[in-house]
Image (cartoon, rainbow over all chains, first blue to last red; front, side, top):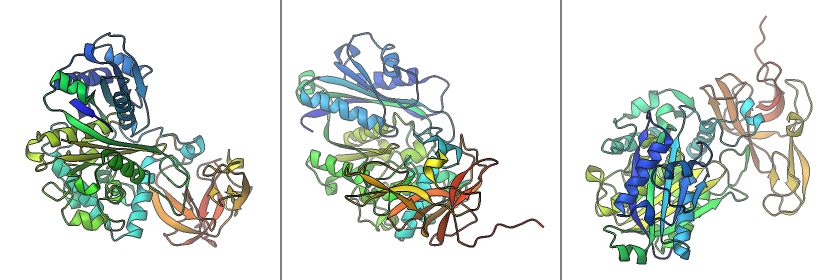
Length: 377
Length: 127
C-alpha cells in the first residue's frame, strides 16, 4: 500500500444500546472526522460496512452528519465487512481517485445465534445451519491435531477477558477464571458459552488520506496503512456455510496475512501487536499459526508461554478481542483497526503494548472472506 | 431437495450421498457439481457411500433458529475415501475415529435427511 495514512479513528462502544444503528454510526464517524481534524465537507467518498440493517444504511447514517453529495457505498462481507470496506477505501486513496475517504462499520445485531449466515434451507431445517457448530468442528480438529486442550481454549477466554477490563469500549469487562469458562453453558462441545463471542452492537470508523493530503493538512497523528490482504474462497478453503470440505484444506487467513505483510514490506517478526478474529477461543489459537506467529502445532505452546498476553512478546487482542467486546459484524474489523491505531500512537493507557510500532488486524467471515491489515507508526 | 442430496431409503436404511468428482483434478464435492469449482473441468457424479471415518464428533446443545430438529442432537464430520469431509447429523453417539455409514434419518416427524451411524448400531427399543 503506497502512501495511504489513517488520519483519524472513531468508535461507538460495543455492547447493547437503546438507540439505533444510525446514531451509533454517526457517533463513530464524527469521532473519526474530529480525530482527523476534518469535516464531512472535506470527505470525497464514504464506504459503510454493515450486515443486517436496512437498505441504503450508509446513506442514512451520513445524512445525519451532512449532505455533501459525494458517493456513499455500502459494503457487506459478513465478519469481514469492514475489512472489505477498508480495502475499497484504501484502494481509492492509493489510486488517487480520492484524497479523503471516510470508512465506517456499524451493526445492531439481535441477541443469540446469528440466524442467517448463508446456509441453504436444508441445512437450517435439519439443524446444520449453526455457526458455533462450525467453530466446534475447528476446535475439535485443532485438539485432535495438536497438543491443545480444552483448558487451553478456556485460557484464551481468560486472557482476553483480562485484557478487556481496562477497555471502555468492550461489552464484558469482568475477569473470568478457567473454571468459570469450563463450567459455563455447553453450546457445541468442546465450546462453552464463555468460549464464544456474542453478536452485538457498535460502530467504528477511520478517515483515510493520501500522505500528501495529510501533510498538507498537518494531521496531528497519522498512522501508515501499510498493507492490506483481502481474499475470498479458494478451492480448498472451508468455513461457514459450506457443508463439506477437502480432507487437506488451506487457510484463507494465512493467504490474507501473507498478502498484507508483503504489501506492507514487513515480516511477521516486525509485528508488535495483533488483533485477531477470536469468534471463539479455538479461532484465536488457529489464527496464531495462520498469521505466522507460530508454526502449526505450536499454538497452545505459544499461549502457555504468555507471549500473547499483555506484557508478552506478541500480545494478541489487547482490546479484549471479540470474546470480550462482542462482535458487531459490520464494525468488528474497524474496531480492531481503532485499537491498533491507538496502540501504535501509544494511547491505550493500562492496556498499552510497550513501544508498539507495527500492528496487525485479522478478520474472517462467513461466505469465506478474510482481511488482514498492517498499520505502523 | 433431499432427492438431490442423498439416495432413496426409509429411515434407518443405508444410503449414499450424491457427490461429484472432477475428471481432471480429482477433487470430490458435495453437494454435486456439474463443473469443478477448482479447475473448471467437467465433474462426474459419484455416490459417497462409505464406509467413512468419523473425523469429528460434536453436538448442538442449544436450540438454533430455524431448525426443526430439537436440541440436543449429535453432529459430526465424516471423511470419505474420496478425500471429502461432510458435516451431518449423528445417529447414536459414535466417537471420533469410528467407522460410519450413511443412512436415511428422520430427525423430526416427517423429516428426511442423511445421517452418519456406526454399522450395526441398533436404537434402543421400548418393550
